Image (cartoon, rainbow, N blue to C red):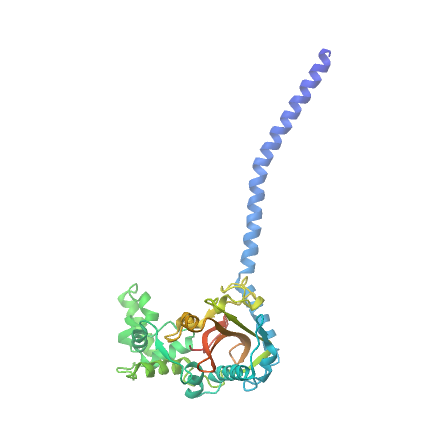
Length: 357
């Protein structure tokens, strides 16, 4: 190779090395910028998907769709038989189907009839033994002195008027969390605001003596003091599923069962399940439990006969229609289905009442 050719080859090598160095510098600068922009786009998408505006939009569309459903009378439960899906090798006899329909009717009437007997007929069916959960009596007594964290401003305000007093604000559960952080001036302002909104207060609120009567009073208060009269007005048969099966082991929690896209998540975010739907398992807050637990029944009979029910109930305005879940267990010695778990679809809109359990 002559000198000229060697010089040209060297120049080409230098050129390629120079390009490689430039490309390396370019990538070192460009890649972080690209990552930054991708992260910004993902963050923007996340904000859009989880924004208040998106939430309101999706929730509004969903509620409108629910409102457009055809709703069946709560007293007409016979069509529910057509929605039963049986587990392998299982079939209910007519008495068991009749009892199942009666249990569903009692459920519906508990939140619509507006009487104490209708509510207790569902929640504490005659002849089924129950007991208080640990610390239940303390929680009952605390309700009349300290209140609770209510899911509704209306229920909260009613409690203040019925049991509250401005001199006890520091002990109320909703206020005690922030009371210590308030200055003396701000405490007095809060006290005056309370008097303005709820009156001078109740010195000696009327508290039932017996624990069961206290529990009934709390249920009554939670219903808006109507025993849930016309709270539910109908149910959507098209959105009703009944899964009947037997198991010889402890059953999966109701909220973990597969009821389709509606209940894929327990969160409240717009990415949850049927977008804005989550699940509030009301039975976890109950102060009452049956003496026969799942484990007791399994030990006694060797299996559990279960009916898991999902439906969409229509509610009196301004309430929205709401998916509800109920688990019934068949107690053979009683010849009846008994409610063991209750949950509701929890969409964030305006609520005046919640199903008490």
